[in-house]
Image (tube, rainbow, N blue to C red):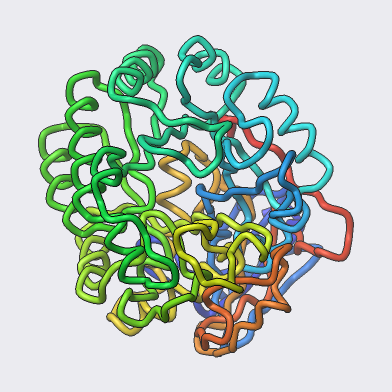
Length: 446
């Protein structure tokens, strides 16, 4: 083989189907060889990982709220992509809210891309939005390269991104089915939540009761019915209710094209352990009980849940209302972009899962679901995106030391296992002190 740009030799190279010692050869930003560890490979640069390190593919986080432009004080492409790189994530897909304007038409997408193009330390793609009245904008957004369309079935938390009612949801799905677009759904039923008891001040139990499982269960069932009828591809966001798992299994058995994700916070925390007034834990749908958490882990084990992504939804600290601890008024969102890998690995290893499982959930599956054909794996022809992880090393989270713009996260003070030593984007280490060199991605590119 002619000279390579880079060879990384590791005793443990982790892939979705297992791990092995290997020498990974890179040329022009792509993986061109996966050889035995001691293979003779001529390269300009050679890196041998330490005995305590493993080589993972760069993670793909397809659920990130960057909030830029419009709410850049909540986050922003510079801070978000630095946090991603610090956490071993080499590709993010940005949600259409809570930026202003939301990414619901081509001019808004153009503005979003212009905002991101000089700030991104990792590669960035974009979701579009499906809101009332924008069915005519869906196909143009598809042609402009969005990966799919986010919708809500109840108030999103921001007025500029309103929810779809039943008729609007069906209309959007019928339109998307004409060009095989995918609808990604925040599935909670508005009527069920309107009927529930309102959240009451600092009580976490009252907040949990205000977002009952039945609201999630019925919304997922409704989306499945419409997907079966229209043929539209659908993806259920941030599954928190384990009651939905049999519905997802049956839908797949029936041939419905449906996928599902959950998030590190639903796999890490339990309602029983959240103190009253601790609004840093508020998210929607909410963190539920310990028994429910274990069923979500079983959903990952049997493949009902395909992937784990952050749903990084930060805000300024004042919007969390830590002074009053009022779950009814605090912003609902958890900041975790930099911490997803160690958070998931900490809990996964306790339950007998391997790093290959984590790679499948957090790299391969999100890449496949978004159609990123050269991301999410260590394979010949893929982008040379890597995470060097020390999987047995522990650390204690200090929110003040994270790259997130606002130093608030429920992981603050929590001891996690798995330290990201370095992150590589297309064969070069990401240096967050240097100029950014992330690329903007469009659907279908290789």
